[in-house]
Length: 246
Image (tube, rainbow, N blue to C red; front, side):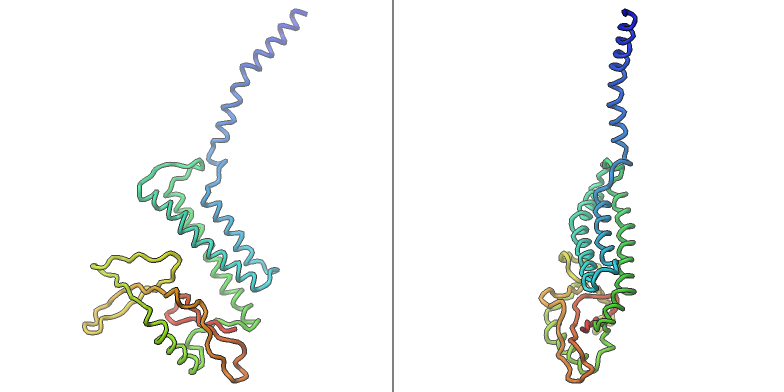
C-alpha cells in the first residue's frame, strides 16, 4: 500500500514538473511567423475574390463589369491608405518586423508582385472576355478614328468649347518638380514642343472632375445608329479618346 502511494506521488511530481514545459513550447509554436498572415497580403486575397466574381461566367454580364469596377476602386483605396502607410515606414527607415516575419520593404515588394499579377488578370478579362461579350449585346468601345465624320466633328467641338478651357497643364522640368496630384484623379503625361524654339516639353494635365464620366453624343437619324454613343473621359494607353457606344 505504501509502495503504491509512493508510486502515485512520483507520477504526480513528474506531471507537475513536466506541466510548465508545455506552456512555453506552445508559445514558441504560436510565435512562428508561419502561423501569421500578413494583413496587407490578406486584403489583396480578399480583393482577388472580387476579381473572381468578375471572372465568373455564370454571373450576368453587367454584374461582371460592376465587379471589375469594384476591384479597381478597392485597389485605389488600398494604395491611398495602406500602401501609403508602408511607404512612410520605408521612408523613415523603420526596421520593425511584424509577427509574420516581414518588414515594410519586403511587404511592399510582395504587394507589388501580387498587384501586378491581379491587374494583368483584370486587363486580360476586360479585353478578351468582357469587351467581346458587350459587343454581342450591342455595347461597343470605339476609337475616335472609328467614328463617323459628323460625330467626330461634334466631339472635337465639345472638347474645344467645354473641356479645353478647364485644362491647366503643369510643367515638369528642372525648375518645376513633379506636382502633387489629387487622389483618385485621372492625369495625362503630355509631351509637347515650345511654339518658338521647338524645345521638347513635358507636362501633367489633370482630367477635370467637372466633366461627366460619360458624355452623350447626339443620336443619328439613320437606322444604323442604334442606341447612344458616349464619350468616356477616362484616360487610356492610347493618345486618342475612347468612345462607348450602347
